[in-house]
Amino acid sequence: MTSDQAMRASDRDRERASPVGSAMGGDVNRRVITSTGEFLDASRTGGIVPILVRPGAIHAELIRAHVGPLVADAVYCSLPLALRGETVADRVCLVVPMNRTGSGQLNGEPLIPGNLLAFGGSAEVAGASGAPFQCGILSVAPSALERTATALGIKSHPPGEGEFCVAPVVDRGRLGKVFGLLSRTVNHHKNAVLTKREASAIERAFLEVAVRSLAGDSSRSWPYQSARLTSVKIARSCEDYARKWRYQNVTLADLCEASGVSERRVRSAFHECYQMSPTAYLRVTALNAVRRELVEGPHLRGAVSRAAADWGFWHLSRFAAQYRELFGESPRHTLSHRAPLSQAAAN
Image 1 (cartoon, rainbow, N blue to C red):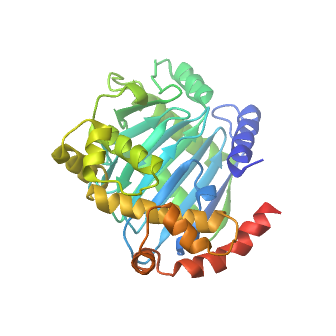
Image 2 (tube, one colour; image 1 turned 120 degrees about the vertical axis):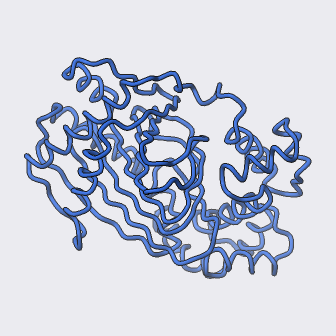
Image 3 (cartoon, rainbow, N blue to C red; image 1 turned 30 degrees about the vertical axis):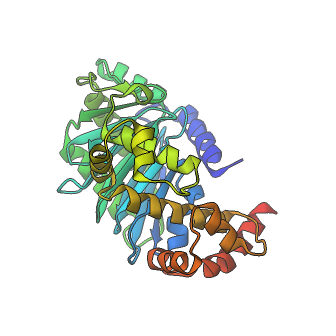
């Protein structure tokens, strides 16, 4: 069973055992990340893969609380990064930007305070955040939202499987206080346990704010696959094309043909999505792909040169310099440091 499957099974057990408004206590844990390896470990971030886009010292904090039928995360990251992947199936994921000013976007929508970005299960996610970035994330079973809406006597509009929508946050002050409470609970500690009263109050606050926010105008909701041709869709089509060819000899003209738009529109799409040019973004994406292959792949002779060539880097000394600049270590160091972990996981 993978970590994601274990988390979903645990969440289902909690939901069956704890009806809305009567949580049986909750667990809160805090993780501080200061290494590139841990930050880019996809197994720790579910289906959303972080892509490092700029070198620098890494400091990230994740505070996670399991409360009744929901999982609440308070996230802080010191570095700008790109994100791509999809949400967990059979869960609604709600992202609440906490920065005082907007910084980045998800699926073409700005990450600004007051926005609630709602993803249905197995919904595609693509975007980038500036630095520093702070947000709150709620993962909850659709049935819990339905029960809360019924109890409040209102009609809510959560996104369905594969859907994405944006709604204005109702009662931002209350939401901010609850996330702040989680942060204070584990301040200077790694783990903490909530009392039944604390867990019940936190669960009720999160669910009520989510349901009331999603009860607003849902006209901006759509299945991601049938979205209009926005910047995020243009960038995604270019990424898919480049990845299909493993970033080898991909030109800007190729990206224009793959997306069906002009060179100027391709450039503006990548700038809006990732604050980078198409060539710069695809280069760092390829470097991240090489690193994942070195971390997760078998330890074979010539693994570094093989992985570099597979992802379009033919000039090995230039590749090594770019790799070191981005990740702060040589590709051979990554291979020697991570290979034992990969072999242990395989066994």
